[in-house]
Image (cartoon, rainbow, N blue to C red):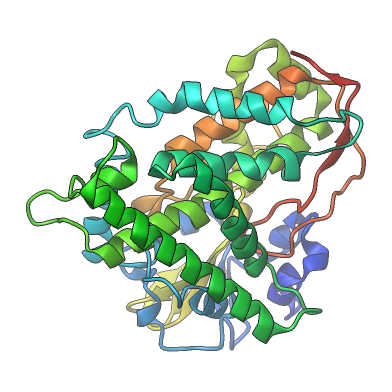
Amino acid sequence: MPQDILRRILDPASRADPYPLYEELRKTPVYHDGDGPYAISHYHDIRALLHDPRLSSDPRNRTAVGNDPLADAEDEESTALPTPFLRLDPPEHDRLRRMTNRPFGPPHSPHRVDSMRPELHTIVKDLIDGIGDPGDVDVVEQFSYPFPVTVICRLLGVPHEDESRFHVWADTLAASLDPDPDSDPVERAKVSQGARMELGMYLAGLIEERRKKPGDDMLSQLAAGGGGKGEDGPMSTMELLSTAALLLIAGHETTVNLITNGMLTLLRHPEVLADLRANPGLAVPLVEELLRYEPPVQLLPGRTALSDIEVRGVTIPKGSTMWLVVASGNRDPERFADPHRFDPYRKDIQHLGLGSGIHSCFGAPLARLEAQMALSELARRLENPRLVADPPPYRQNAVLRGPRHLRITCDGIRP
């Protein structure tokens, strides 16, 4: 195998179709070039490691700095806010996740996500109504980008008049995630850090307001101590800040890409688009197949071995960093029959698109519902949609993969 396979995966020129590179990577299931991270590319190996307590997500456990460009970039981006529980290990991770889950999902708040259906439907309807010229639509700018950030604002209890500020912060932080060799890295870092500081200051003020005058939103419940029971809580202000920021940044970016990748895939498979239009219930298995076929998160960098770990006869030494290439695992022929075929009728779709184990996607129920509603309504209301360019221009980020723009033309928009 050529020694530059990981460099080619990172190359923005590969973003439109990285799957041939993943296929090449699977020929060496545990790939290591002698200096960089160990790349794991097969489904069963990735899933086992995601459940292995010897694998750490905490950057403080990394002893080798500079040999994993993706992990090092994550460290630089997160300096303005506390480390979120996504990047912590037990017991800190488990405590914060339990507290965050109490006002978000079962068993304590089983109806939180489902009760948002009417509001989600209204947001989707309003965005489609506001598209304007059906002959010139950018699905990203006009729909899949504003939809999730609006939902997160409503979930957290951000006042309606402040939602536009969240959109600006989301724009800035999303831009900071993409490498840009033509920009000044010092200026980019300054702008990104400024946005994170502004977001943190705003959230700190909102938390104090909610402590004094709680509502029925998720942030109010966390701020009032509703997320902490017994030994767990309540959360400190800094823990609340990191958790709220995590919901905005991680939840927003993955859902944008899930919806956009989904619409692109449907336009490339018009027979499935027609099926979805005729049968909106198809959205449920369709989103699961999308999470396998075109996952919004392509790989998980920055994982560290807490002790020697053996994978397929290869010993990964303690302290080594790993990439878990989940998008490769999702198309592993050892696990899925005909893995490069998009098939929402597939009987077995146990994908890695939302992770697995203790770090499985916290916002998965909401992301699934958002994508199901978004894609079914777009399929129903857009009349004869066609791609303007295929492939569309992609964001440069190798981890969070999705089109930066998705230009389409339609004959009209149905009521």
